Length: 78
Image 1 (tube, rainbow, N blue to C red):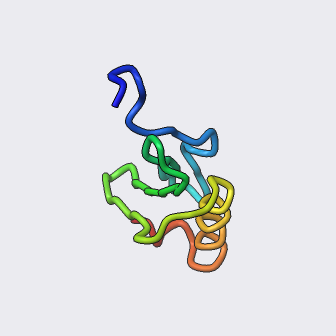
Image 2 (image 1 turned 135 degrees about the vertical axis):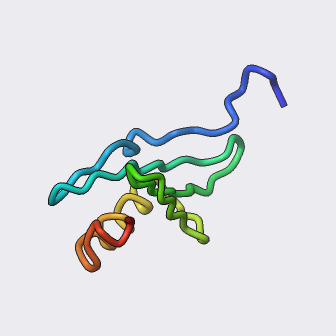
């Protein structure tokens, strides 16, 4: 592997998400050379939630995150 090649590509959809006084950090990324996107959600208290499955696109991962927030609430990540 080229030493200047990043280990992963971070999606522009990654970042902080706040709702109802709860903030989490959403990381959507794919390992270098992979087409599969991964997602991790971390609370400000360092509770990590990661998905076992991968996603075909960063947008698909984001839509899954929003679906969980809309159906279960952001507190599910605490």
